[in-house]
Amino acid sequence: MKILPVFLPQRGCKNRCTFCSQWAVTGFERPLSFDELDELVQNYLKTTHSFEIAFYGGTFTALDESEQLSYLCWASRYVQTGICSGIRLSTRPDEIDELRVRFLKEHGVKFVELGVQSFDDDVLRLNNRGYTREDVLKTCEILRRFEIDFGVHLMVGLIGDEATKDILSAWQSMKIGAKTCRIHPTLVLKGSILETIYRRGEYVPIALHTAIDICSDMTAVLESHGVRVIRLGLYVPTELLKNVVAGPYHPRFGELVRTRLVEKLYSFLNASSIVHTERESSWVSKLNVPKSKGKSFGFLAQGEFVPWQDALESYAEEISKEVVLCSKR
Image (cartoon, rainbow, N blue to C red; front, top):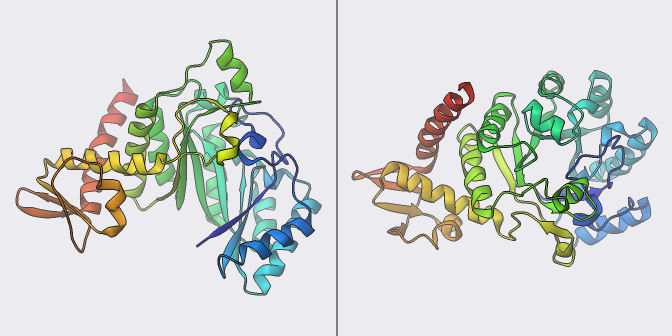
């Protein structure tokens, strides 16, 4: 399903997270008027016949209820005409409670994306998130109770972060019932608090190859348990790349992560060949290993075909054991 993003840059945000600078990556310094939003819809209809409307870039549930209602009523007009198939929004875990979830459900919200970033309390504190792991768990329990599906947004390379914490965050996302996940490495953005910390020499971004390696393992954990990873890497329009001061940015980050994951599974199985469909061609094209096209995606190992999902589950189980052991040391 295609998504029409409606950006509400930092609207409703009550505190400033170290890494955040919405204008730097969206180009929006103010929300669009409803007339401008209507024009946005009409332009989007030239490319597709149906889509979801998503309110991104701020903390939607922290807006005044009257403002929330205005946006939801505007979106509902397109739901009622059949143009829009649903409404989704992004918010913070500490800005969700039963009253607000009931309000969202009554006004047609079908999906909530939670900016979790990490399940590690130290990482959350060091990056000025303003909530704890326990707050996240409570929020997800409320959404499940009201039967509103939700996804999570995770980041790697934050202040105080490390690979083990990232894998555990992916594992926890699966355990709490997330349907989707977006993952991106931390970038130092112009105008962010992190830029100041970086220029003082107090923060070093993780390398691109490290970000790819961590995100590939996180993807394995999530997708082996049915959580769809719908975005890998932060999308930055070409004209705004000048606002990326430092960090592991790559325009095809998601493809690099997928390729690395295929490579890992190939090695894990001691496979002799990769079998892929047209869909996975870009993932495997740069791997210097035997490969061929087939009807299903997977590997030839010890003379037998191992489907992709089976290989993914075996690999994810192995790395999860290692991470759990490391976390207990």
